[in-house]
Image 1: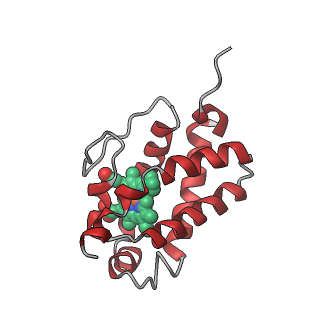
Image 2 (image 1 turned 180 degrees about the horizontal axis):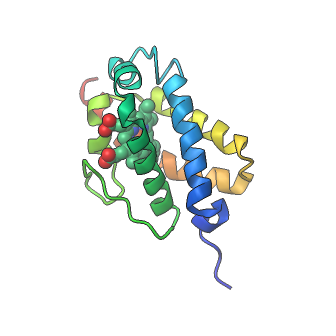
Length: 143
Ligand code: HEM
């Protein structure tokens, strides 16, 4: 029998959206990568651009559904070099590798909050980590 996709094992779009919702709120409140961040672009986004947060949650949900093998296709507002590429979406935010790791830790805590099993948690975090180079490209250019 074919193995269930990660999308199905996570519980589909509603379960994924719940994790993304929790995670995205936690990132905004996180002092390293959200409000009060030493990165001015992240501090500013998390305080002055919050009318974009519902859209960000929607786009992140689509992205996770897509990367996990679900029946939705992510379509970037700032396309990268591949369909799930994130370099252009994040370039101006100048996210450093340490900031990326803090966001990944926040995602891990949200997955734990919803009781996502270790195997699926590991797969989501690995899918996320696979895009670290793209997400942090903007900080490399100015280094
Ligand atoms: C692999 C890891 C990540 C994924 C999957 C991801 C996902 C996304 C997606 C799908 C978008 C929308 C792209 C678009 O509109 O075309 C986005 C934008 C954004 N991401 Fe990420 N992201 C990641 C890492 C990060 C990190 C580490 C931060 C740091 C806080 C971050 C902060 C943001 C912000 C603030 C925006 C909104 C920019 C705007 O206003 O348009 N992301 N992200």
